[in-house]
Image (cartoon, rainbow, N blue to C red; front, side, top):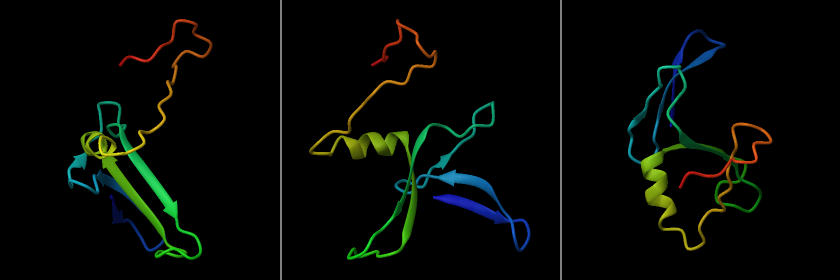
Length: 93
């Protein structure tokens, strides 16, 4: 859940991010970036219960791990290499 503060009638500034599952604040690191978490934005289509609504959620790493552990079909996992073309790049699991 993203928490905004009013700056004026036109502009909002992000003042924090909270996990929609447990409510924990997702903190910024020393560089000013938010801790890793999953952010989902879904605009629902016709014939759904939420027709035309956009739902936005943020889930902390711990809650995502608990949630994903209950999936019948696990998420597809691929690796992201920080150095493009690095032949030695591999996931650290």
